[in-house]
Image: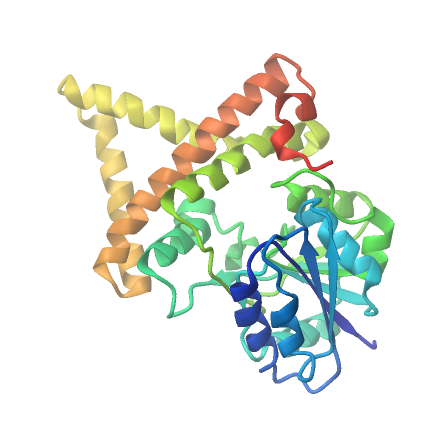
Length: 333
């Protein structure tokens, strides 16, 4: 099989990130030709000058368009790419030198029309970035759905590090207009169309997540808002596990009330859980402070997601509101 890869990278007001990403792509150990397509999604701060700095090192194309969101921008780039396999990345990623080799080796051994890779924390990341990365990727918090080894079967790729064949893109028309949530929506539609997905564990990226605590809370709350919408579109994908962050949040309130009344039974389980988070993160990051920050990151993640999930469930499942009417800010025109 002759694979020709096209990197598809939308960017919005982040030329510094694009510079780091392109610098890492220029150091790929992959010996074959590949292309890079940069889509400027209506930015006020252009990345065009940064892209031009790499034009002599990389086979790179740059497109400017009006702001229509990351999903539509990826579709825009894939329609203009020359490859037969598209590699979709976020602009805040750094790519290891062997990334393309790992992707090609895996696809030649076991071909699928869509794959995802994990994200990891680079040594240059701040303590907050490492704590958030832990919270978003640990088996203790997400069950490994973002790249754990136990989630290889029926893996749902995420668009910060995702591959999709030209054939699969053309069959599904790519990403929808919802954001966030466009990643699992596309994956589910791929499954319905008969395509397979998998995790390529070795094809990891360093996902910087230039984010504050408040932005992280907003982000995970949006994740919670979109899940009931996806459940309404694809009811066969509903899982009890989607309720876990909300149940965690509600349970913590009961645990606190119980503790104030002298009953520490429920609080005991929360203390044990947070202790496990602290120990696991401290060992993995080799830093006690990051271990402490990880506890806070988990709380922000669960409470943000949980409140969003409950609100959206009420609007979508109880009030029977149309998603675009109930949450217009989650949809690009």
